[in-house]
Length: 291
Image (tube, rainbow, N blue to C red; front, side):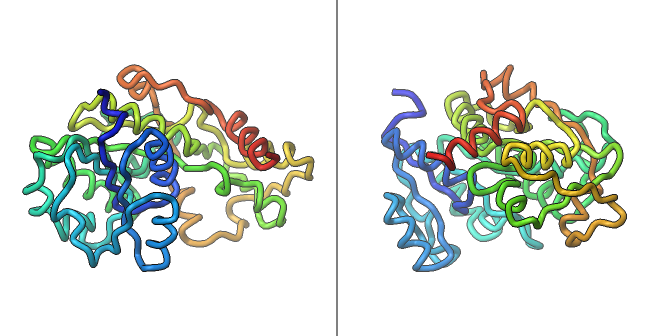
């Protein structure tokens, strides 16, 4: 029986966009899925989908892990570091014999700004933002446990997918095409993230980090323009970066400019991306909306 079949259990710390897609795939394959929720209403919604929900951080969800547990951490770190390790590090290590695989969802922000240059998984981690610095700290703390726990890190580019992309903003007329010469971003469809994580479960390599991004790093205004074309709507006007109205968080993303290599997920995990560029990914979202 392979690692992608029952009777394995996936325990998700945080059940956001990425975890939901992976969880749905594994449920369909006969896995047991356990996830954290912040309140009773969200827990009930998870139960309705066949997911065992725990109110967390109130519940001690690591007190008695089932056999063959796979642990996915997508909850972001705070000023105290990773929330699971901050509260339950000793309990997790006490249950390590039951843990078959650990995946930590991080971000390509750990590389900081490279002025448009390339990085791969061997590149130095030089985060520029507070968000990136916290992720570096959390990665370090998780990978430090790799001798005892089979931990893997996934550095995700900008995530998009059904319900999370440019189409609704274009329809509402609330998106800008921001022009900052030389600026590029990487992105990744949520289904491809799930594919990479599943491939890692099937081929564990504890202590390994993976860049999870598609094959085309490009200017963000190019993506917005193409999305408008697909909708048959006018392209939003091009606005110079200096004149654009953005939140401090959005503006901070433009402080980092890099190209992220994704060779390792292909060579080591055998992954073929379903959506190697935004063109395929956006077309698939529109096709799904039409069904």
